Image (cartoon, rainbow over all chains, first blue to last red; front, side):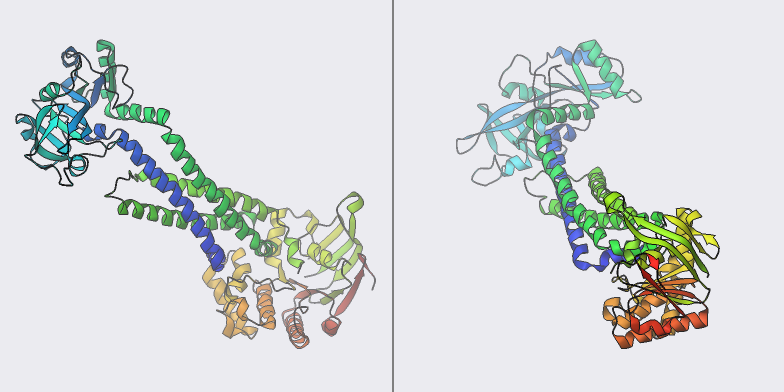
Length: 379
Length: 222
């Protein structure tokens, strides 16, 4: 009987297509807006993601997110290094610097100074040059997007050997690296910590973060508590720091509300259009359900038939919607658009579609259960 | 299947909207009998066959089908009773347009737990027996009215019910086709010893009935 239920569903081509198209559209809106939201949120903490070596980030206790840059005394580094359970701890400078371009204009850049000895905190992938080249005098690395776009001179990308001016000081491009796009899409420049403290605008405390690796077998969360209790500075695991950053952007930028509204609208469109179309489909077929009831179909069988129909259209609608979203993401992969479609977004959009169809199915089932089989004798 | 109705009453609504559809029906239908129930619109014909088919429940009185009091059956058993013992033929055929003739006919067997393959094989066989073997894979919209009613009759017969309830089986058909359908139904009663209840307005088909009962205002008048 279930196969017949599916034939009934697909038999009315126009209604079936309308149902699938509206569900696909709802699925597309939910997953595409969701993917852009995830992409935007990932950009907020892209530097944390790019810096994968440390387990823990130590910072000023008033820091609210990754770009909230507050210096600490250099002694913090040594206090952290002295604690039990620490494999290594290295300094990191992160700040903003003005780069003077060949045409005389200025470009604000993210400026990162990594540990001179270990080069921990460096770019995740080198495109041109080697990480060790950062030890050359006045050497800096420029991220690829910055080299090709905002720092390019007359559309000619920066290359190894080019010289630029940072805060009135000479800097030599020793490598081009790949980094994840940042929230503000500014060029990212890497240099060593000591070099950074010489070039960067002078402030009293230059140490922005201490990157910490926990010894094998030591719980990073517990180590964070120890660091907080001993030094009085804030300490977060990488994931904890990402969460802190996301919460800040979520709370103070309205991103969550903006995207939440779009995703909610997708859901409402789904319920309103697809749900209504599915309900109408059931109402149109009510006479046949009444006949089935008169001929001895149990409520349980009829409910299963409606649920199967709902599950099938939601599955197809979800598949098409998520497929179009994935294609959209693939087509936009080289653009500025922030787009990330993680596995859990597939599950979430599938869940939303299932909810839409379940809501429609529940109303339809109530109608089917209440239908009086005696209507079969009415012409 | 023998049907006995004792002082059967059925009312719809309450207060000023109360309608007495049946007002004490006394009726006995013998096994293998073709009984025709006639009467004007609103006389209670459809209500009566709905109670006998366990679709409606009477307000008062008893309806015994093969000595089983339908009033005492719980809902689940009424559903089972309908699926096993009753065949329906409707005025507007009521075939599912998205399904083929074979699939339409196979439905009652699927409700009784028969596998799809067996049900469809039996459906093809019965459609061939009723002279529409070439239409087994066609959908109802490709069939004439007479052919559609034959498919509906096949659907009513496939699960070998004891009682077949027909609601105006010829009203959507031209005279010639109507007569052919009635001949077919008469043949089923004679050869297969089925009990047949036919509700009809059509005076041209009275010749096929073993007995005619006339209803007016919820009462049997002859």
